[in-house]
Amino acid sequence: MRRWVMGVAIAACLGLGGCATVGEDVSGTAGTSADRPLGAAETACLGAGQTSLPPVDSEQRDLDAPPVARHLRPLIYPQAARDAQATGTVHVRVLVCADGKILDARLVMGAPLLDDSALETARAQAFVPATRGRQPVAAWFDVYVDFELP
Image 1 (cartoon, helix red, strand yellow):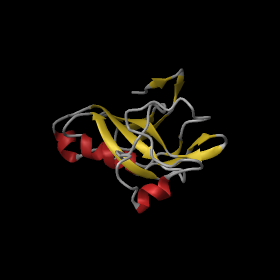
Image 2 (cartoon, helix red, strand yellow; image 1 turned 45 degrees about the vertical axis):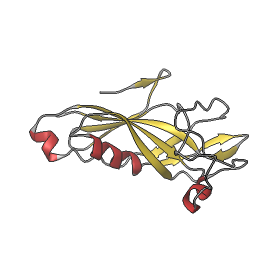
Image 3 (tube, one colour; image 1 turned 90 degrees about the vertical axis):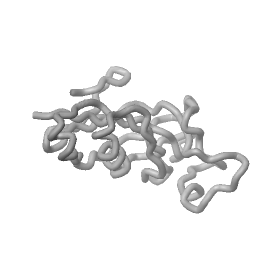
Image 4 (tube, helix red, strand yellow; image 1 turned 180 degrees about the vertical axis):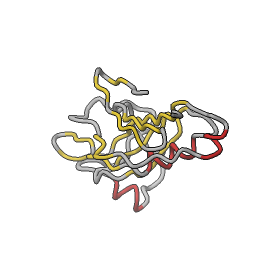
């Protein structure tokens, strides 16, 4: 199964019948709050001109370019899900830091037998970060992990 986003399919089928698909940048934040100071990992995640991380539920329309997956890591299809013949798509939102690493991953929609594996797969991806003013910045990005049995 491939997901079409803005007319472009970006998918990599992974071994054992799994397929991870990367979607468009849709919104912004790592659950930071203006009323508390940023931790070391959050501060390191910031890009040029950023003083706070974008909110997970806000749209980031001011980006020059969204994050782009450099490569997709192998998906592990949980044995319990295989045994139950569980299939489906798990939607995960990840915070891609200005260095391309993932700081946070949140389940948006999924299936109980597949959620943990989808979160682990999303956290393991490597990205080219989003840009604003041609400078790398932290941004939220949606990842769709498709689980299909052969």
